Length: 209
Image 1 (spheres, rainbow, N blue to C red):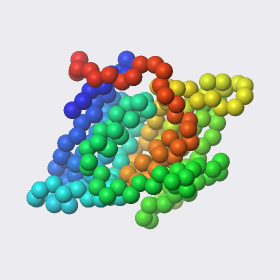
Image 2 (image 1 turned 45 degrees about the vertical axis):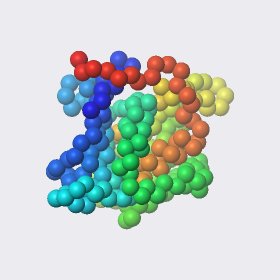
Image 3 (image 1 turned 90 degrees about the vertical axis):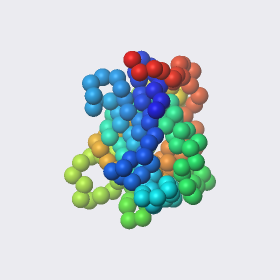
């Protein structure tokens, strides 16, 4: 378990075996405010042999559970870096080519198995936004992810991204998506060059109050 402090708020990152899911489980939770009001993001890596030695399934089977709330980009990076360094992403087929990460200024359609997703990005008021959602005609809820990069000069000239310490991920609703799609979304935003180095305070380890 790790607890990180950023911008006056606390965030907990844990990794453990989840018996109900038969999976190795990573979880990011906001600790500031009443229980259940903070952001929640979890990554489950299925275990193929739950009754024996841990044997993780390939990364294409990993699931991401977005439980709502706003996560600073730098705190999200702490979680992703921990998962990356763990060695738990088995046979991850990560395509960092321009063809996989480029996002033209039109609606972008992605697929994973039988699931279909769309990504769009646009300037809205004082920020550049990247949105990811699943194309599901049977869906009754408006679940999507939104990465917001504030504009340093919203009223004049071209878009100038604010430093990375101003960037946020907002999880609207509660939904589950494949890890490869989530990772591709983050990679595409990074490849666009809109995430610039932070200038303010970085997350620091903190003790639970």
